[in-house]
Length: 381
Image (cartoon, rainbow, N blue to C red; front, side, top):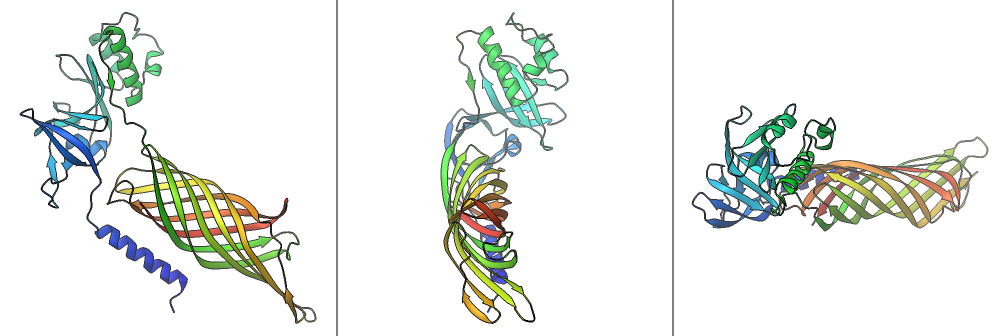
């Protein structure tokens, strides 16, 4: 019969292979405006700012498997959600081609962002009817002073200007909102900012745990009770707060079997203990973007004891032995892993390594620790 470790590895390998081979898309409702001015509804295949700079992929409306990619010279604008991209030629050496500029502020003076192939962000502004101007990090305050003279209360020479309006999407957006408000009272100002999106996913998890118990006071007998490898399973719910942050609540079933043996010529002592418990972690989680997402999580957990038993063989006299652990114990959990999400943003296959440490107690008195290393496979939907 296959060992639990080999069975876990086979399961993980099979699921990863099936997920990698699956062909699906992460689609979002969007539309684009053609060079002729026509508006076309389409489902956009989500990507990063860097990829969006050079083109957008849209799901084939005819139902085929081949996505249709549009380059900046083929369409004028792409809009999805609160995000808007406009096509423009950038002569700067970092690009020297037509790109999609991500609009950050839309008003009398617009602010744009583009990410080059090295992942570096560049910012541009454009007055109504004027040309695009590239903002360089070391000289942007001087360039703004030369071109933007419509607000007398803005002091570009103030040493705190750069600190207040830093060279970033956030800092420059704050500046252009302030400038447009001052220079063009009453003119509409639209901030094309990614909106915080709240949604919930749920799923199942299963894997293998290597758990050890060490007791320090006489709840049973002090000492190390060894390591126990067992399979565990559970369910989880995850509240997503924006693109990267989420909180994770899980219910996992665990078990432990261990023993302590003290050889002696006259009075050998052997103790075996067993526990069954439900672990409830509440974790704060950070996840990167894309179809292959790295993530890390950490937070407290509670272990709810649902069963315990034991056996003692002292000097060849066997008897039941009750370890008398408290029903509730607490600890900390942390882990990291990778999620493969070719289906959608809510459907993902996850592989995670996790470490947990619990303080065991009898009532209010700590009596030892329970430490677990876990290899988990999860599926969210």
